[in-house]
Length: 162
Figure (cartoon, rainbow, N blue to C red):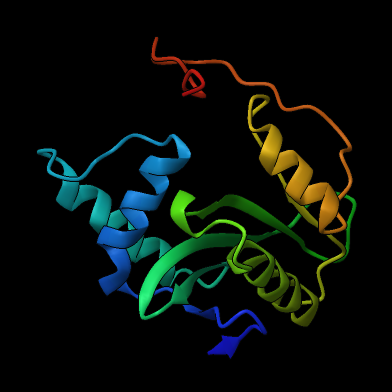
């Protein structure tokens, strides 16, 4: 476990963090799967994800409570010898923002990516998440592209802004 100067502790996510992580992902705009008939299927997927060798999940703890989550996938890209680290999800509970959890999660993700010899980190962020964009720029990231999606299910994705 690593601890930031702000008192936020970062550790690897555990299977027992499922409820907290699911709540955070719903806060990010992902489907809220808690108390749904297929919740156990989502929980198993989360556990399988954590067990993969090409992924890592991290949680930020403040006062003994999970307040943030990031997951990182280490993927091979064509025409690159080194892997790339990709962050599918980064979320800090709204009530805990501005206390260093996001910075600490990204710092640990970067540290792990460097340890695995990655040539870079990438992530996407929805157009309307302007505060998140400012945060990424403030922490040394560059705005380098656009992300395009196409729904194959008829459901809007990403979801409409809240």
